[in-house]
Image (cartoon, rainbow, N blue to C red; front, side):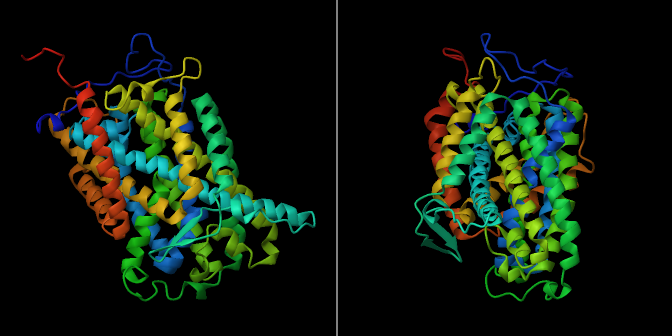
Length: 499
């Protein structure tokens, strides 16, 4: 049994794919995912997923609780780790253009049980990411509705009972909020889930429009907000450590592990490989292009935000609006940012809810999950049943769980998946040198090792409660694997084979 736990899925050299021509054959005439996405779509999908919670939500909390103005440095460190992983993803996605992302890559290199662990970590990544971003979306939407009410002379407030989760988490402690559940978060997950159900092209088109809106708003924030930056707010750049991971270099590194949450977009790009027209060429462009653009925007926005307002006051669910509220002359920009944040966070939820069902789709096609999750809608060509399940669970999580816990869990799942992809590139270079690689990681031994070490190092700065939750999540995952996946794997020999 121990040997079969590490059985590797055979990898055949991928053909050059033309539009509408699937890499994998159909199963008894079943509908399959359709190739409709171009390089432009993929770059915009990446930007749609990356630019969102990092700027509009996570930046303020990480600065207020851990890094101070050095949140800029935290973004650089997280971006560097992501760059290493992004290069590895680019090589894999051009070589194995299927929908499973890191799960499929690990299955081809490190074996089935490790692939299951990565796939289960990706469930944690995408599912909890959609929920966490929905919580931030709720905060900005409530603020936007109240701002619009003020424009018309009304002091209307959104009902507090329906505006947040019933519990919150801060400084290592849970506390009640007095709310029942987060209604706006449930509504946005439901709406976006429906869009993902009806088609990848419709989802990609909606994402492109949303990305244009939020990038315009972010550039306006940088341009106009820079005039109100007070350099004194950057002093001290790295606040003195107050114990544990509150400030100092431990805080900078802890913040890097938190804001890593913001970079999962390029991983989401790889889940669309089986729907890309020319994945061998377009996947590296989509992954690396979106990563470079977004890292630059993150660092600059972090500088402007911490320069406009002291980092101690940014620990809210809407830090950009919190900073702008201090400057009445920027009232018009506050409204624009709220609109941009609502649009931006919508696109993040959209890409996350697109990505997770496609992970389930790949795992189902390998036999590790029931065939239910691999079903494709005959008209929409989407994994519609998996999309419905993911949307329901994400809505429940967004309704009842606080932002901090959700964000940390997402970062852990992401970092572990990225580390295994970095290792997998080196393994496949040795075991399958014959595979055509249209993109190759430069200086692979150095880049891959640095990528794995940097990702695992950031995981090490997570709190003990995150490790406990991850251990419980992993245990549940392996119960499912041994209860169903191991016995139904397509790598099992046919009944009666081998005596």
